[in-house]
Image (cartoon, rainbow, N blue to C red; front, side, top):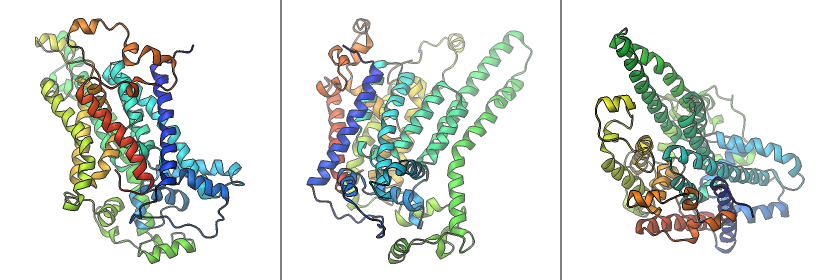
Length: 512
């Protein structure tokens, strides 16, 4: 009988979770009438025929084309036809369009172009989610240095509270894959390689720009390590002054730092330059719209490139993204703080509390790590300063988690204060590993003493029941209730949001 590794178990569970999402959204969309939401609906081309296979695709996958998915598919099909589409970054729509061109060659005889577009988007996110779960498991092992927590965190990612958005035609799946891959590279390889992948992430979602903090932090670590290395070497030889040591240190780190930050910011800058050229360039240079699109734009009083310069062209700086977010989505500091938005704040409260509780406990348990910004001294320095406290190397209190904690707090504060707060859940779930690491910590039994810890002979057996290691999809995360009370609470939150989110989203009901 075949025995699966923990990595294979994560991959199989990711596949099973996506099948559940697809099945549940299809059933919910079929049985529950759609809510008449005041949301954007991409206009259909009346000249495109709709056959029974297209109707079948709509029945099976139509529940995924809700809310912002309408924008992503619209951009993939028609491009950036009017101003408010500029809020959505191009990497995911371009990827969908590229795969559609390939799949449309054999499928054009069965489905129309829009159906192939939808099939392509779902297939892309299905595949990316499985790859993301595997990459996230490796990242968790690298940072936590604990196979139990890494495995359980990866399983929790597969049933995360914003799970439906990783399968629907949204950019969350692509962004999470690129972000977690870049984080893994940042931990194990060169910063330059990670910066290029971070750059791709920033061309998928605007919050990818925040990832520049990981590049800055990594170079700060390199600067510290290089400084101590040179200082210790020159102390023995006595040949170099402290000033020269500082000059060499900054020379070693500053150039790669500038290159890394440039690579992260470049895709965002290029997209804004393209927007400026489209909406602020010479009149008539933009391609004309199809009749049904032009009718839609005019009837809804939207601004398209062929109407001349947009009002934001004379702003400084002339950024389309900030203008569109302000004009069409009313994004701004405390602008969402209204009585009628209280239900949305309640909806986002659990994930916000996960971030805040983790950060508070981390600072209480590791004050030395926090004061030192999570940058450890070398072993030689620790011994010379006669430190009695050595930083944790593994688990939820590891010094490696400091930067991830800071990153999650910054994003959480931005979500709560500046944007539509219901987006908080899916934004944090696609960006912050800490959400899953702290949840895995809560559902795990912690050893009370060293004797209990030493009695654990095999971490694989501890992470998963031995009987489940021969079963493709069964995991103890779902078959056994966690013993800690807060573990039961956090697992209930994940499963409840996983299921309810699919049902509500697929019927155009408000969700994260």
